[in-house]
Image (tube, rainbow, N blue to C red):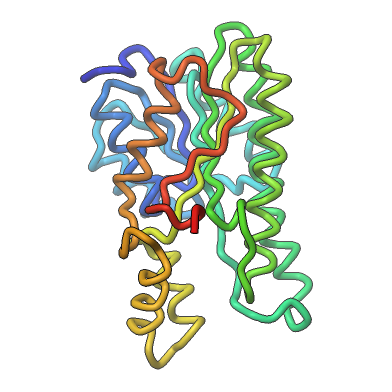
Length: 253
């Protein structure tokens, strides 16, 4: 399949598990992809692995100037942007709300919310002429609460609100905006969270979390990427303003 022939995409948080899986699938299906993240070494390696239809740039998505720069570099290279996968995010720490470090709370919101805000604000004028699809990584934590994760939960709820407003404004311009809301996925972020929940027995934490998912397991980055590519493609041409779960029925229980 080459659903993305002649399409140009940007993937933020590109070196993470979900970001790299989405980027790989986009390239495999014909897209040209700008890879955006904070680690030049990892970006360079990923770009080399994915081949000549990729470029990479180091950027802090929470910085408006960096956002403008990665969008400009993409347009300068390929003339347009059809797809933005706004995937960059951080988990913060696991701590009771009353003990959560204030500056870290603000940092999580800067990256997870302001990073998406910057991307929406600056990509929508670029997409306005030809339309496009924006896929934002939220979480099941954007649909329900979780003890000890107040910053992350707040940020993932917030991007759902941003998505809904952007979808209404983008619809007359042919710009579709949706969130993908995964359950726990087999990525570095979950290893980090499991370790914070129990540094001595992270595997037990994983078992307990998996038991709370009706499907009985974590998802994979590739499963999330499959949903992202559906939303990025013309196959979902009437889908906008939606929260799309990939969660093994976790949010249904």
